[in-house]
Image (cartoon, rainbow, N blue to C red; front, side, top):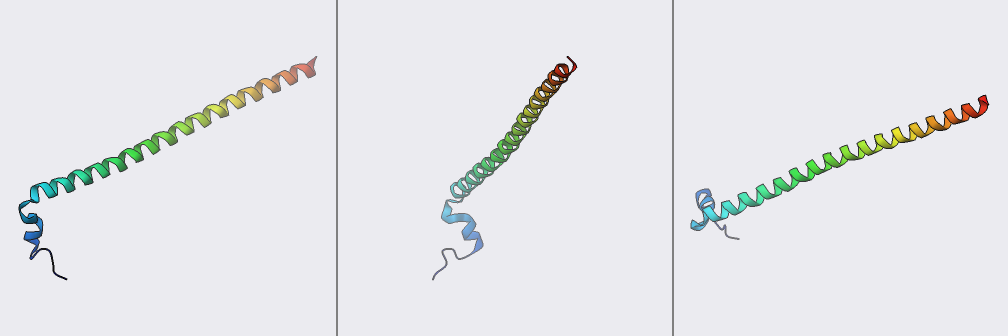
Length: 78
């Protein structure tokens, strides 16, 4: 098996196409990092929204139970 490049300098030069090759590598890595960052941001936002909805549902349930308890206590008083 023969090495494709004779030295590290030749590897980084990429046979005269270094600018295009490394630009493509950089754009690809930046795109992937952006995708990972966006996914993490969306996950955080989604979990926050789920927490808000659960808290709202708990408040609604608690209010309904309070109404039922007060109605039951009024009936007992009569």
